Length: 445
Image (cartoon, rainbow, N blue to C red; front, top):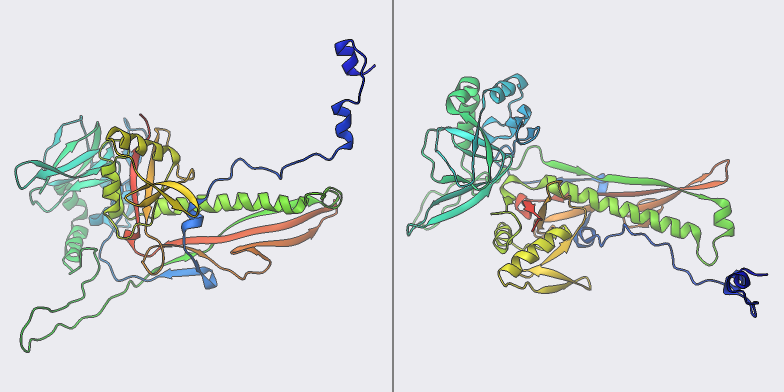
């Protein structure tokens, strides 16, 4: 008696579907993968050939030194300066004496300010360990003009004794470390004098060595002689690599490749994983490559239209925003609060959100911290526009896709076929203002 008859108590009158499937050819899908993302960065970057596996970015000579970011160890309540990162401050840049940096770090004084408290001016430099601080000044007509927001790792103040041209107010609970002029002169007086001398060199608004030009003269004036100085040690970007060894048993490849080629689909899934890793590596590169002058902080918490406008204003021809999907949702909420409804645009056949005509593309490769903060990237792309470019080399042996090779490496004694799958890539930021970042973007409601 069949299983059906046992369950229903009635005799089976026809062939069951379970038995019939043994003689049928099922309709099936190709292997699916949940981790595949749109990979907008790989699609939007202009790819440039990097012959010799390296790309050198030549720039005009700049006098700007230091990134201006100081790191801190421990929790906010027990924050401590990482001494080596003090050398990232412009006036301490280039100090290789770790003992001196430790002495300076030990001499810093800690202070705390609550929201709304004013930080009194002093002949000192303040480094923000935790929190946000707004910089403001009196406007032309007596109102208070907000000049920007500083956050973790930023600094403000001066060591030249001049009065502050702005006021500083804590926006959130803040922890600051103070480096007084007296301590700096005692420990690094010679280096400070050298910094002041370097800062006297003529430069343009971007910190580049000035090219002298005369204009508006009349008659036989003596014209200035000049030349364009280049960086003596330009940065070179070498191609990185992501690799894996794909293994397929010969019996599987021989006997189970109809109607779908097993090797082909194994290879397709391996390449998907490599491309995901490639975009993740490039996003991480961009997050660490943004110049300090191009890093902004949100004025409050979530990303607002004002924040996005400030990010746009830092560069010409912004081609795209790249943000975590949760950051895009947070921006949408802020727009809705203001009764603003950003337009959509079409990119590569897909409809995406945009702001001021610039597409806002999602990428889950941008990290979200444990405190639900993230970053939004803005960039200009292409060599002609001095933007961000992707680097790869085509025409490599056993090339399967541009910059990606699949090389047969043999069959071992267990009859397992092996293929070496390799992707070669990198990226370069041609000038600092090609890449901008909105940091400390809060995602909570």
